[in-house]
Length: 326
Ligand code: GYE
Image 1 (cartoon, helix red, strand yellow):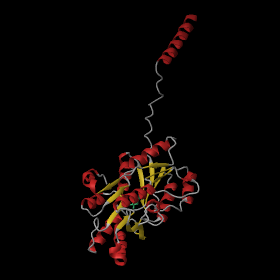
Image 2: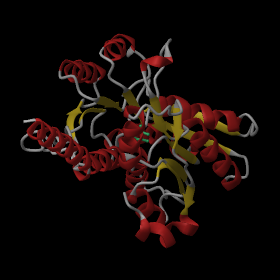
Image 3: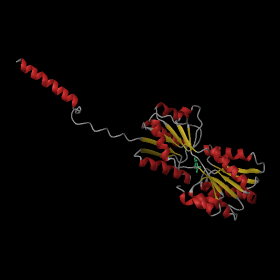
């Protein structure tokens, strides 16, 4: 009898030993790893007012598609109320993050407070905002518009030897790029007393309004116009059309400088009608989603991630036009 117990005990020990030697077989079928949850991002875009904006949208939507991200896209047609409505909806849908290109600088506190309380990170792209508490957004990925204005001012000062009657086409009233491109340009003009902004008016970053405002400038001031500073290429291209229709010579009798660096601007420079443009890179898609990954991984990101800009002029337009991605 005793020998039977001993054998049983040895068997028990051996099997438990074996079992401790053998890798533990999972109970039943090994659970397949849960499919990684698809990232859901809400993107509130200003609208489609310019070639630059279209390029930015294409970059962000294209990158989301490439990464298998579920991007909820909302085009606000240039209206802040529609952007606020879109953000409210994204919050209700409990998206993983919000990407916002804010049409104007102010009026965002309430909806961003709701996003903060819902613990949804907000990534600003291309335009900044004015808020009393900058914890209401995680980071701003954009160019330095004041610096773009300075670059435009310095280039024009050299081109016109510090003397010109300047007509300014401003971007959307209240928008960060309009405010800051004006600020940077005027900062430079303080050094050149003979460079004067004679008239300045918003043309809302669109080609059509750029043409309209330029027609009004020509009607009232005609040959007095020596230089045009447009806050974006689309308005400059509209102005060029108006100048040509008035029998004037854009790029020769009238010097034009703008901002963005879109394909149409390079074509106009090659044609000798636009003199220079300051690039403002809209291709932010990869950087936006890399930044969201960092934030979701708990990494601290800087409050401002700056896109670097460079100036292009007629002398180098033909060499680079073939390399332009937007
Ligand atoms: O310059 C213009 C667009 O916010 C930087 O908005 C952007 C500006 C850009 O309409 O073309």
